[in-house]
Length: 208
Image (spheres, rainbow, N blue to C red):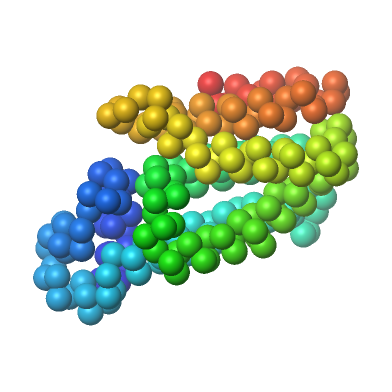
């Protein structure tokens, strides 16, 4: 693996374990056994590393949340989309610990993140929920879909911050991420049509 990619991978691991604020470029260099100068050859500062990690997150979400183009969407696809939300939350969890603070300290990241949410993720989720409504899984109209999209994204975006506020000093765990997905499912549940409730119950059971 190239040094450039090793720096990104190690930074993600350290940020996830210790929080982004606690980790400096010197910590990252020492963790990799390289000199700070070698790190600065690839990245001018920590903010550039964070931005590259965000680009990985964006690509992961956009690829995994894409509506199938070679076949109709099916109810079982919801499992993949929920797994994507869970994996994204967990794999890139440091971004959700203190997202407002992170955005305020990194203008380039803030601009790209806001564009991603405004122009990409909201549109993707709106299309997905509309597709699930069209096949009869959800009994929703356009206004309800808009609300579902915003509420689901708010849970995903702030779930780990909520957990930290509820349990100061406690460790963030995968189980906390699973509880976040259960909260997303709770938003969907009132809209699931009767014929799909047994299958929806199976989906819920995956996250218990």
